[in-house]
Amino acid sequence: MSAELTFTHTAPAATARAADLFAVLYREYALLARNRINLVLSLTPMMVYLLLVNTSLGDLVGVIDYKGARLPFAIFLLPMVLAMSVVSAAGTSGMALFQEELSGVSTQLWSWPLRRSRFLLGKLLAGVSLVLGQSLVALGVAVLIFDFPFDAQGWLGLLVALTLASVAINGLYLAAAITIRDFQTFMVLTNVSLLVLVFSAPSMYTVDNMPLVLQWVSVVNPLTYAINGMRDAAVFGFADAWPDLLVLTGIAAAGYAVAGRALLNRASNI
Image (cartoon, rainbow, N blue to C red; front, side):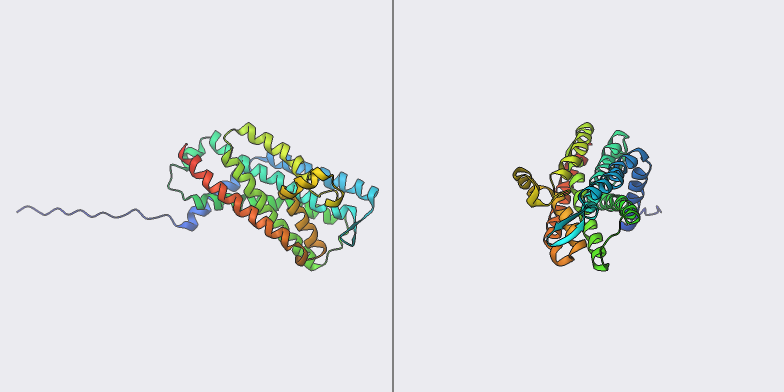
């Protein structure tokens, strides 16, 4: 008699979503934290403006009238410094994508059945935490230097607006990094855009005091809504800041939608 042979097929165990996401996050933090040169370069402009420009211009200008409130000019400039930190750190986060490709990590990464949503979520959480971390460093230094007139609601509003601005700006730079294929082009974009975005927004002046051309540019400048949102939330509360925060939410949604679509094309060409 011959024995009957039977075969069974067992599907491989699926990787838990939490474990997959944790691996992406660990990798992102290691990639960002180990590049100390980029971290120092992104912190330097913020500290220069905070320690030199804010203090010198604050003593020179004194007090400014902002929507009926009398603010020390150094306090008025604080959202600009935080916005610079947001843009610098978002650019650093975007550069990590090119470092992956130059080192060959992207080929290994997309050879694994990794969901696009987990990759983007890992990039989002790591990038936003880097942006927030650097911005909170700036805020901590500012607290030691200046006397802020904000109440508890003002501080809460400032932190919420800062977080939303970090999510929105990080999404835009991530979308740009995934869409642009040339590393040098992205580096030029990050360095030039920092100055263009900051000084075409109502950072050191109100919108009414800007030249007419810059007023038009400020309408499409995402930093306009980030700076106004942080400033209004800190001084007047959420009731005055919600229109800017709503625009930032739309910018964030558009940025990550573009990034997700571009990621499919980029991963398929690796």
